[in-house]
Length: 189
Image (cartoon, rainbow, N blue to C red; front, side, top):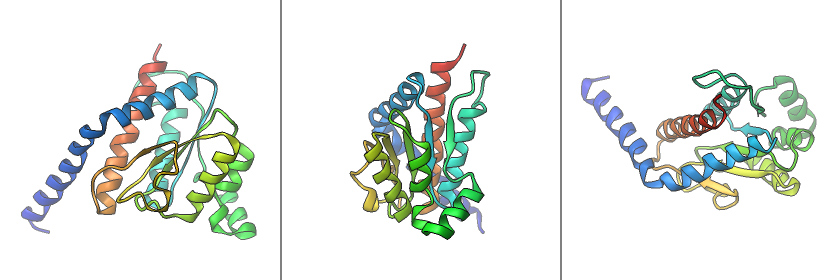
């Protein structure tokens, strides 16, 4: 690694994150959707694969725990969190159903499903989206690149600039922190 490579990586990351200012309206809408669902008694369910699963876990734990300040615990649940459910469903139904099967049992109308995907092409996320739609669950897609097969299927969709997986994940991290900031502001005492 050279100093020049480090500088290029930092500049590329910063440029992709800065470009999100151009989609501030869409981000604000998504923030309001999450806050409104929580205020109405709904829960936030999250899902993703690999690094996106880590982001899904991070969002859910910040809702039940806290982001910055003390506030009431809020219902956030990552469908990536329960390894026994994932391995049971994966074994019995196949990996493509690890999120949709959980959503069948846990999701209800009024909930919001947040899908994290840098490619937008994961079959297990598409199946979860289908179940969500059939149950009247609002879907937010935090996607990457051209949105993949999930493009245009979510109720709300944010596709930040960037092509490299790590740049997209960095943007998703900022997005989830913006959403959490909105939640924190709405539920602070």
